[in-house]
Length: 489
Image (cartoon, rainbow, N blue to C red; front, side):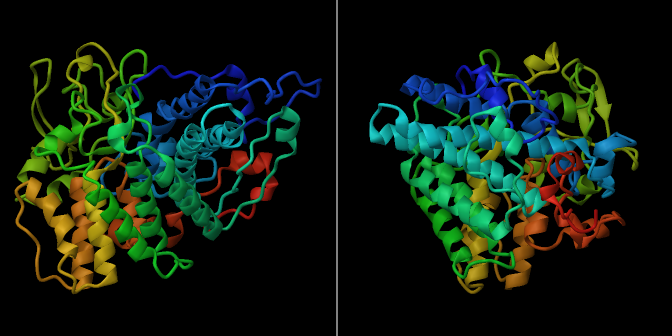
């Protein structure tokens, strides 16, 4: 969001649902006085702004999400020889992994802030339409966070109220809620958000980066599609996923960029293909450090390339997929300092991800202005094809989305595939189109192919239980009601 991010220090302190090991046993002076704040539309805007600044840090989408999504896949590796990143790369994950504890605590912090808005917005003297819009914004963010949590950890506590005092927080030790109930809440929140959020074109430039109705519908499609593969799937999940995708496609609010490279151009952010992105920019927003982590020093002089791309992924990238392969990898070329680099002549070397680029800031800093893409139109087109294939594998319209994505990068249309072959084609197309965007692990888990794919790529430690991460031990120490631990850990 290209606007000042503010949040009251009081709310930041009060919104921690976990991660506070001890509380002083003294008289409490930090209760949130609901009769004083919020009182105005401006107050609610401040509260909503506070939902986003928790995303814009290394411990969330600035770095950690790379570790728990792309490193635990066949797209990115790590230079680490021990520690949490090494654990992820080699499927040797322990409950003490700090990346997991940060993912847990930060998502619950954001959820708690969203709960304040859902609870307090109706008390503010503004129009009902504005109240519903603020609630919808909070519910979208809450759903995004719970979706991450349930995908990563399985059963997690479902907390929909907001304690307003430290005394209340001390007493709150929730048990884990069955995934089935979490998914029901996701659907409820996102249906509400789809109805009451503004359309993309109605969002003013000062609020670009806040969710639209299209973003809520797109995320709802992903929720339906994910649940459709699970044991507690509802009968219409694939149909509902397709319908949600169709609604976004038919809205006319989104389209593919004509050129694939434009999706990642820092000067074209929040464009026609971008449905929801975590905003990184210069003052007044935070900058990102994602180029510093993903780009080697030979390309950007202030970077250190902590996460190279998997060499096997590069080698197996289709030879005819010239547009994407040429753009998404730093393999050999010339860095911005004028020096040449070659990461592929030797077979044991690794190329690097080149999707996140900011040649201006990279000249003199570690930072960049690259937004982190959560939802984009190509993803919706591919979800539509995936869902339609499951509904009716003889339906020719299942090719529409995937072939539209392929056409943009000059690839021939697909045809004549049976249901299994088509699903494999979808998984591959998502791999090539959405690589390094935090989607690959989810895709493999969703389709039940995590173990088969990673084993074939040489990861001999991968097991079926790795579809979920362990509940962080630091959280279990604070709240034994989180037991039992996920199987395998």
